[in-house]
Amino acid sequence: MIVKPTAETIAEAAQFLHDGKLIGMPTETVYGIAANALNEGAVRATFEAKGRPSQNPLIVHVASLEQAAQVAREFPARAIALADEFWPGPLTMVLHKSASVPLTVTAGLETVAIRMPDHPVALQLIQESRVPVSAPSANRFMSLSPTSAQMIAPEIASRLAMVLDGGSCHVGIESTVLDLTEDSPRILRPGAISKEQIAAVLKVGMNDEPQAERRSPGMYPKHYAPATPVEIVSRLEPEQAGLILDTSNGPNQIEMPLVAGEYARVLYRSLFDMDQMRVKTIYVQSPPQTSEWNAVWDRLQKIVG
Ligand code: TXA
Ligand code: MG
Image 1: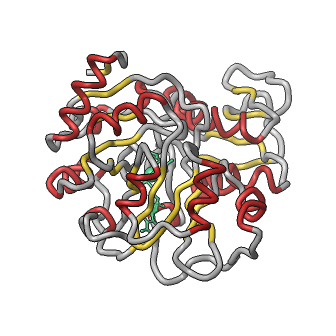
Image 2: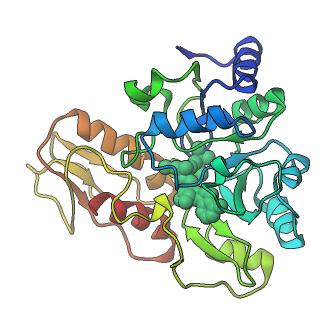
């Protein structure tokens, strides 16, 4: 069921998508469960596959600015500026939704999260399906997001008509989610596109208050966790299993990159590998506290709970 993306398999997957089936879609961040966002049955099947509460909204993936403009009620100047700079890429923008987007996708909200993924297979799939594509990360609710086709859990894979194997995700953590529906833009979920990068394009102040009105799944205190308990420590003893920043010296230790973006790229994969080793606890050596590490720290804190 995991297939190599070719012109033929992508065309077949696009037809499946169009017809309301679910597809495992590679993106630059993590793999997603793709569905035709205009087909409520397909969207409902997505929530069932994830075991995810239906009050958690999905991101709609598009392949062009034109398609983004159809999904949003209006596509304001600042969204255009951000799209120019960061799309295709790991930035999701929350805007007022157009009437074409079912409330099943947005969990009843009048706003919709939109992004254009930076992966040739995803872009071709969306384009050929001729519909906007909703896609949450392809994991069961509260488990790690997959960053390769092989990391997709069997319970999820069994619900997918096809998984397109687009290789390892080069960003490795979920997109930055930015709310543009209020006067000041606000980051709802940190990711590879930083607050500083967004502020530099918009030249406005950002709202730093955490979003209080409603819970987003990315904001549950515990999320993305592997099955094994995880503990953050300042250094690992040689016999402790886990992710280490110093030169690896134990057999159950994975040496992690010292650059934040590279660390993020391999974080879920490394936790997945540790999980498979069936150790009692995964110890994670605390990364630096500087702003480049914000998104990594956000995920680590959610993993620890
Ligand atoms: O990188 C990603 O964003 C991946 C890939 C597959 O594109 N997708 C992903 O989807 O992480 P998911 O469903 O696991 O997370 C979607 C996030 C959640 O934090 C959700 O609350 C937020 O986007 N979100 C979606 N629609 C929203 C809305 N209308 N208002 C506020 N937050 C929204
Ligand atoms: Mg997710």
